Length: 266
Image (tube, rainbow, N blue to C red; front, side):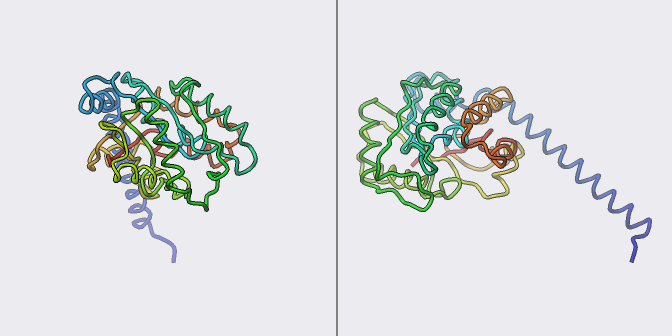
């Protein structure tokens, strides 16, 4: 049965109201973003260390591109606040035999994020292969991470949480290794661990519309990028030419992880 004039009118009204609601949410998200992005990292650093430049942060990732794809808001916010940042990437990302290419892409990406090549380390060990179905050995991984923490006097470690954002087994292995070091009290005194919150699929792909939700929910650290920094994060992601399949471009447009990081302390 064809819809009458009243039915079409109600449908049009519903669409208009939905559009107005989305515009209102987008406007509110932008206002929150501008307000929080300016001081979020400084507020965190001030609450955690006497000065932001006392923070010696180590980002522990599984693959080249993790630093831009998932952690850019944390890295850029900490660097903006004056923290010293380094990256320990626990594989060369050699699943498709592109490891050497990806190492160079990682250095280029980190440079755009404010991390010099001298602060980027890649662990290319045969027992830590890039494999989405493989859980890495906790003891071996913990040994590499702890050695790097101690050698560089790190006092803040950032890595994935138990969900690994995407559920990748290599990502979750990092959480298991850091949790082991933390629970066994093997980390140096004063060294804290922040884990990146995994969110549901809906929140993951609503970009800045997730800002109000992230601000409302409890967390230990929240980093939100300015519009200029978000473009910087996208440029860093585009350094990973070997990984830029069509769906990566959609990811850069819609993923909240390109703009927002909410984290919890172990």
